Image (cartoon, rainbow, N blue to C red; front, side, top):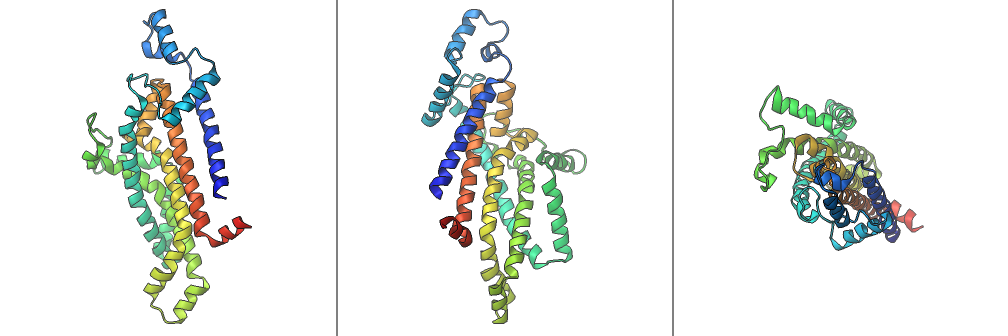
Amino acid sequence: MIAKRLLVSLIILFIVSVLVFVATLLLPGDPAQAILGQQATPERLAALREQMNLNDPVFVRYFTWLGGLFTGNLGYSAATGGPVTALLADRIQSSLVLMGLAALISIPVGIIVGTFSALKRGRAFDNATTGVSLVLASLPEFVIGIGLVALFSTSVFKILPSVTMAPPGEAVWNYPVQLVLPTITLALVVTPYIVRMMRATMLEVLDSGFVEMARLKGVPERQVVLRHAVPHALAPVAQVIAIQLAWMAGGVVVIEFLFRYPGIGQALVDAVANRDVQVVQALSILIAAAYIVVNLLADLVGIFTNPKLRTEKAA
């Protein structure tokens, strides 16, 4: 079963690589002309086209690019002239920091709020939590981000910067106050799904027979919740968490663009604007690979933590 999942993931990644390559081919204009400008001589244009392999057949260019992915050779940035791997190294670190901070907030908060919501079923806390999580889940990430900027940066409190202004070459985590709004925005997008899943699974577990048996034996309610209910509810929630982490790989693009955060999302937007094809291809396949790998891990978590699912798969 795991081998089948791996094979499906590899096929999807191959299809995505074809789509990414074809999509970059459809970008309007001549990449060499865009790099050198309108004043470039025909000789310089011809030399750059040869350097970028633009004169080769399309399928040769595709397999050359695909081979470079396996060897770590992502080509050279048309905007900077340097290797794409060097350009993206700092951006990837910045995005991982942002996603890691958001995960550190959203996962425990989602589990705790979802658990209390289930324990307070039908009461004011449960109703408020359900309403807020539904509203947040229905809002796009850029709407949440703009709302936070309006609240904390422009017209109400004015206590947090609305954009990231770390000097070039410096790590963004050296300016922690600039991380606050992007992190909270990403966390608010992810947390409602964890809350709702945790609440639903906790309600199911609290109504189960073994929890009722523990209560009949006189086990204190705190131990019933912490030792019996929560551990059994975490297994299905782990799969939802993994899926939300996969979503972060793509959803972070919009948030980074909104806050001018120097991560892979901002780099992708800049590369598209500059017609930096090599960077666009590298970032697109990187984001797709991260999404596919984390989804694969989510599937594996679901299989290993759900005995019923393991039995069905084995049959």
